[in-house]
Amino acid sequence: MCAMGSLSIWHWVVVAVIVMLLFGRGKVSELMGDVAKGIKAFKKGMAEDDETPPKPQQPPVATMPSEPVRTIPHQAEPGHAPAQPATDRRVS
Image 1 (tube, one colour):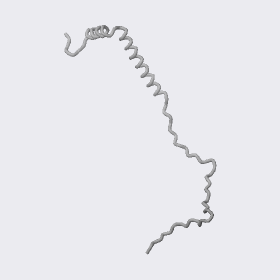
Image 2 (image 1 turned 90 degrees about the vertical axis):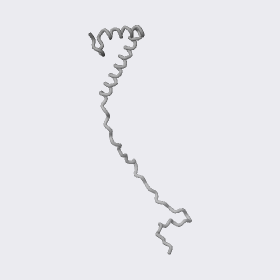
Image 3 (image 1 turned 60 degrees about the vertical axis):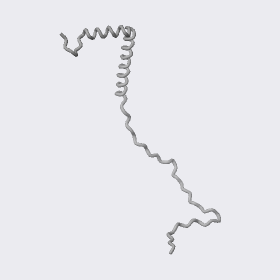
Image 4 (image 1 turned 180 degrees about the vertical axis):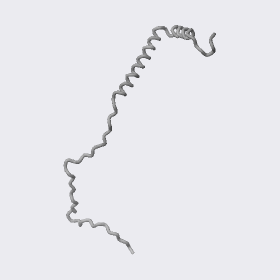
């Protein structure tokens, strides 16, 4: 006598026969082949992740210019007086 809710081997055989009748033998084998390919691809992807160690990140290197930067002093245009520094002027 079977308890309610438990499935025996005969229940699974009946389910398998119904599935074979509905989908046909070729469709079921094709589906199982696709499942197997998916599992293999998943395992391969997991193995590739384990094989490649993460590259250590290097801080950016500051580079010096090949020649020092030269500044050109400002020259006043002919006919113009050189600029005077701003002074604090207060109007009384």
